[in-house]
Length: 387
Image (cartoon, rainbow, N blue to C red; front, side):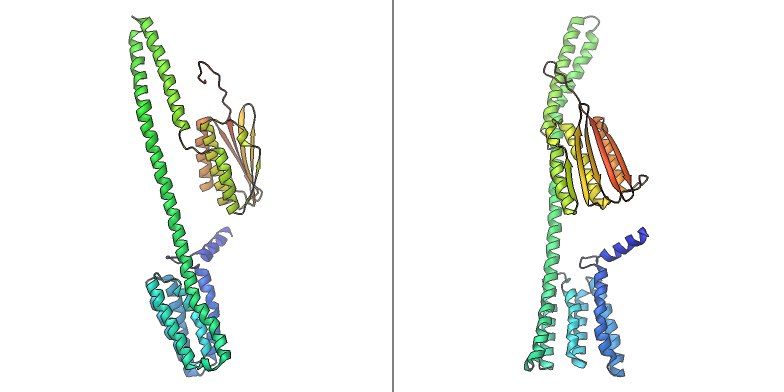
């Protein structure tokens, strides 16, 4: 049943290769072709032999015009010819078939083709007004004008909407590229810092430790001095690492809480926070790990839970930090090996760096709870350094 619903959802939302409205709604719009079919059915047998094949040709060109960018302008021209024939041969009301054509005009790839198609629409309207002497009948003119305006404006609305969507997509791609380049630059900066600062220091530690090993038997006092130099150098290296980490633009738990609020609100999921992470003095590393884990957890809630509420609980004890993300969604099968569980494995691997633990609980139709526990590291001062 779920596979059937998934296939139905894909069919309803599937769009043509070059954009445009979903194919399902494009086909659903064809229900209005019944009106011209009924009108032709009331004509003589000879007219029906001509009219029904033209209707079939009209429907085929409508579908091809929506699915194929290459043949779209020709489908529009064919539509205009068929509508002109029906309007001349049968009745002026066949002009309303122009709404089918207008939807294709809005999908034309450039303004030149749009201009050609709209010129054809205007000629068609001019023919209608001339052939049926609409200007001499005010009631007929008032009936025709709204349809004329709608057919002329609909392509512009669709064209502007598509251009706006294209610009938004390009903007998103540009932002993603900027983000990628920023990360690349940050990696290069860290690489330079490690090479310039730690490379020399670690080389010195290696040389002095090797020298101490050679001197420890014949010159123990000098070997002790070398070991003391190694200790001082290692402390300097530790300080350099801390300065490097503090200078990085790392993810923080507080920032990710603000981001989670925006992301969940965009998905129409209410967010409730219990506890105040800002009251904790988190080290940069643990702050980054918790922030990244919260980001992944909220992403899973939005993508997979179908929840309406998400509760983020923060607590800390003398021994540990605890972060829990709870939702009231559909839950999932813990034996599943899908993308969500791949993300959980990535979180656990990340938390292993700080001896953290991740617990995931979920039951069908009642939601999920993701609990992250990270031990608190106590520091004792000795000569100004943490242990």
